Amino acid sequence: MVVALMTIILVQTKITKANNQIDSAKSKADILEERKAAIEAKKTEWQENIAAKKEELQQKRCEVAQKRISTKFGQLENNRKMYQTVYANMNSRLTRLVQRLDEAKLDTTQLKTDLATLNTMIEKLHTDYAAFATEFKGTETAACEKTKVEFKNQFTEARAKTAQIKKDRTAIKDFFNSTIKPELQSLKAEIAEEAEQAKIKAKNKIKQNETTDTTTPSSETTTTAETEILN
Image (cartoon, rainbow, N blue to C red; front, top):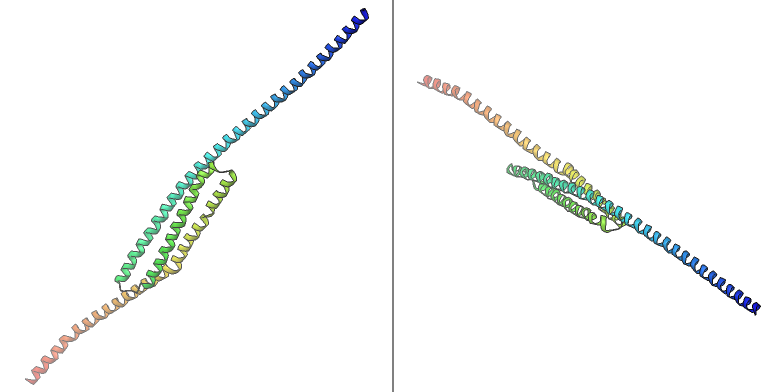
């Protein structure tokens, strides 16, 4: 009887020990899962903080870029107004000069044709400059709405158009110096030549009048003497 009782107690003890070991194993698994979950939560929080800081930094950078682009665009607009004023004044002076040349009865046909070509070149400059300014202004929005690579590409394309502006201005300058200016100098030379010829004619006329005035009294004296002799 005692032996049977002890056997039962021993079996129960083993069962209890086995159950405790199972519970202990479950507790360790739970602890590991909790630790793993905590690590994942920290990792997620860290990644979110990094993303937030990165986004904040990107926002500050794009705002700085927008401010610089806005300032530069203002300068571009001032330059455009300056170009418009300079070329408008040049056109006004040339127009007045052509009018004076026409009044002087000079042939300005070729000059007028070349001035029309010059005005076409100036209009092309204004058109190209307006297109450049508009595209450059568009990069202000792209600074915050597009990716860094997309913004850089768009900005580079806009800046590349400055080469065409320089080309237009150089073409205008070269055409004026090589074509318009020589024609103006030639026409002015004609005016100077005509003025010199008119001056010479005026001098000759004065001399002719002086000669006539000097010889006329001598003729009258001879006539009077002849008359006296005849009488």
